[in-house]
Length: 457
Image (cartoon, rainbow, N blue to C red; front, side, top):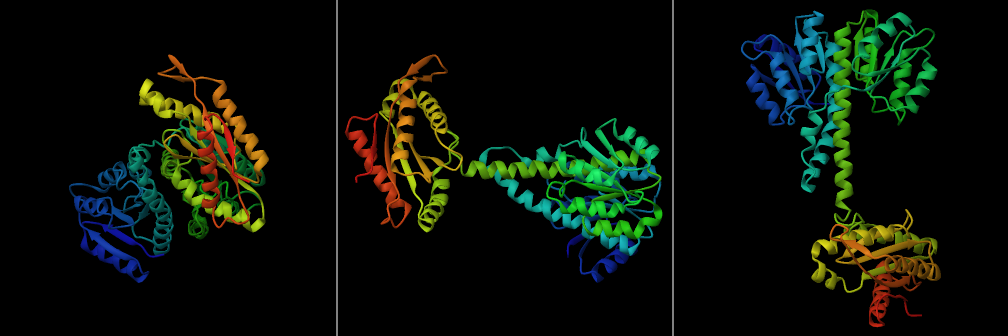
């Protein structure tokens, strides 16, 4: 996987060394010699990952990382801090600033390439979500990036798979100050527990007695239920090759034993933040998709949804020679409600009208606001007699109870006229069926309203 890598270092020889290594692996490389230039490149969206030197004059790497991670425009960018410092306190400062990982000088080539590819894969998924989530702003839902960036990464559900009791209890005590931790020593039971509960992160020891912890990571990555849950490996220094294999197939992070308490807490928080960042974006995408096909006033599907789904449903009914029915409903004398009580009252009537219709329709039915006070209901697998009964039940339900308006201070009687039609063997498209339903509705209006009329025989 190729990617655009930004190298940030104030020493030109360091930049050239990394540039040469990455270019030979077919990465596109950009360079910045100071923090402000690096931030400008990132804000323009010119890179996919940042290799950031810690020790720079003026604005050091910690400050640059903190700036990038606190800005909704750049918070999704993976940042790997490159440093000669290898003290736990230095790593903690970087993790607190939001760094995704560390590489210690002199840089091991295998670690460099594996980490860059792993983080770029994660970013590719996030980029897709980001682009789709931004559409939600068009629906007045606020800025999903700002909301996602504000996530703290605290109060998470954590699963720890570790059979060294003392080590497990020590790590659980550290994490327990900020999260709820579930301990599991048996890897087989851990797999069941992970699929039965919604965890925000899973820590797996690679040296479980009689079991390959890396295989458990692979199983967790392959299951739909746990595929998106961050995985953190707990490894010994001699496990370096297994760590690289884990990162290569999608494990998110690792901790070396002896595990530093502060680094453990910081890395878990980073992974939880990243997971929730994606979840916020995914939620915005889902919400925008729903709004795109939903009528904002009634909560019913809109005309766009009806038009895009009706043809497929009708074609399926033709292919399978199965019945399908259409109801067109129109509130009687709706204009007089608006004129007498105001348009706000009219909106209240439409919302209540939609609620009553839902009571008499199934999940497989299409219920859509057709325009104004008209609603169309498409009933798969329903013939004419049953469609007439459904229409009559809706008509009765509308008439029998007055509608509250003006914030429940007044009531108004409402009736509805309904036209009913079913698929005919001669129909070329669903439009033919809807035309007959519309003609039936016209007859119901002409015959005095508040009645159900079916298509002509």
